Length: 317
Image (cartoon, rainbow, N blue to C red; front, side, top):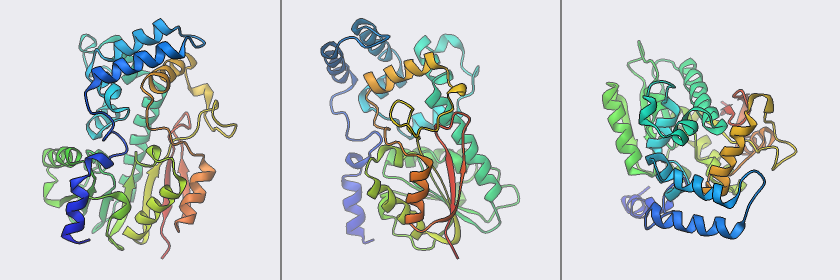
């Protein structure tokens, strides 16, 4: 990639962020007004009157995470990191509103995301070996790599790639906090255009394919990862599975999900926020896409509810 190409990417990078960039131009207040007008026009739904839906939207505007979701319809690196590293009881109850506490402590999607983060860390820890180069794309705050234990593995290199400069800045701060700055390099690039060939032993990726509805684009993303991995390298990634209301092939284990809280989640993320992380795929679809990109030895590791599985795939020798 030439310097001119890199400059072009950085010039419009914020508008190309599919998770939370380019979605709002005038703040959460205008977005909230638009949401309220839409809810009034749509009418009551089973289990929630218009008045109840509007009250919930207004309640979201009462805390920082709610305002971010209202404005951006997705999560940035900082909020994702806060959600996955949150520990129940670590924040004084008075510091959170009731709705904020329910989001952090009870929503099935949040719990699955937090469990997925733990699965990533355990999986990656087990893959570590001397002299490795590990990459995170998009890296976000890069917690899945920076929070690992590198005792006795001082020669491992860590690479973070993200289009969001704020994410790279947060990753740099966490690397410094963890005493890992000397082995970390950060790059502002598009995940589909890494410009790396056989450079990484392990590549980890979370949170990008769930915002991309185009299956062809997802296969292209996996091909980008495939090319960036060394032969016998491992990809550790994840995907969102469809709920039973959207697909008869949904793998969700409803015995693990509180239906009342699931209804609240649907109101918040689907009805009110219209969240952009809605690109659902089954295990079979993900397996097919990874194989189309060239990967083999595909292994799935499910969270308890089977909502946000982890998948490990290998690039052949």
